[in-house]
Length: 541
Image (cartoon, rainbow, N blue to C red; front, side):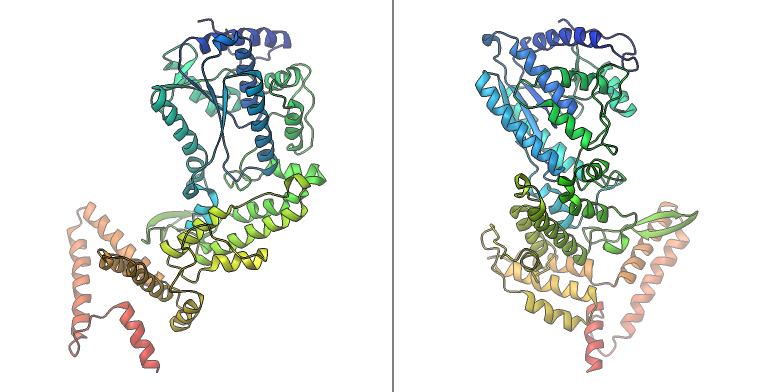
């Protein structure tokens, strides 16, 4: 197969316009030969940024140059909608996808576009507001697999199951970063065919990266000089990148000495993996018509705080206290790993999001006033998690929704509005627990567990579930953390073979139990945290 030859160290060297034209011609032949070589379907992943748009345009033009009888192999064009993309970019993506679909049908091109989305359980707001996952950090980057990788991989697996294998065409370039260059170079070594690298995460899938050695300037020269074959304006894309640059400066590329605005980065407007959302900030700064996005930027900045421990539970999401060694200013301390956002803060983020959605629908341009920051289906799933998984039977989501929007919440889930317990019972329980958050949580879990099992014909497993309620919620935060420290110390003593310390700690537990037993001489009732709380209340009366 003919391959487009690259001079050595071409990534570092500037390519002249004439060299780029010659290279594009050779690359077109390479794409055509690779396309006609076998019956393996192609999956072309696009974000509709400059790089993936360039690859899609190159592939389209190459296939369009083939006789109609050779355009037999489907090229699946997939775009992942994370549902938290920059709204301006999201609108561009949907417009581009629609134009692509219409043009492909009209021109007889074997292009099959698909808009992929994460399943409801994996969306950003279901995880953050529903489950209480903290805003993503590099140490806990839970968003990328759920929002981007899983939907694309699921689609690719389906193509592989149907056809045996597939070729994934991507717009990745070595010039994007040194890390990307190193990864691509590593995969080049393992290539099984010319220009095709193995996919480490997906079996029977090969990766083709046509513009791997292109620079930012190469990309912009191509997009500005070559007409878009599906009717979209590349100059619109260019203007969008320019608007996302802080100084609003994105010069027209006329030769290799002119810098481009290729460093503008688009992504999720909620992203806290970067210090600032520079692209959205620049859009708001450069264009008065985009000032309506300010509420979104405010939420993003509020989520992105250095220390959010006061907003999070002292336990992990499954209810256990887990400790870690913290080094702060040279002082080592063993502290609990903060868990999910507390009930108060989950409700706070929902309220802030609905307020932003309501405001943007009033202030956005006419073509953006149907903007949806959180879907009805997502809110239904959040409500289910709060009610069924977290046992928060006060059912605060419909109340918050009505307070913010002035509309009644219409839950699409069948039977969602039926409940034996509600806000009134929650208020009574709060009064009984006298401000003790752990006591309230335990009582709510016990009551709601009984309610859930009440509907079942067989109550198998209820005792284990009730026991789990006590294991996770019957101790005060101080006692739960103290117990976790004791377990940690005992585990370390066992691993170090410190028999004396193990005996000391275990005998200490036995002594504490004996003290409790002696105090129960007049009664066989077991002394528990819950019984102590009730006896304390009775003594007050």
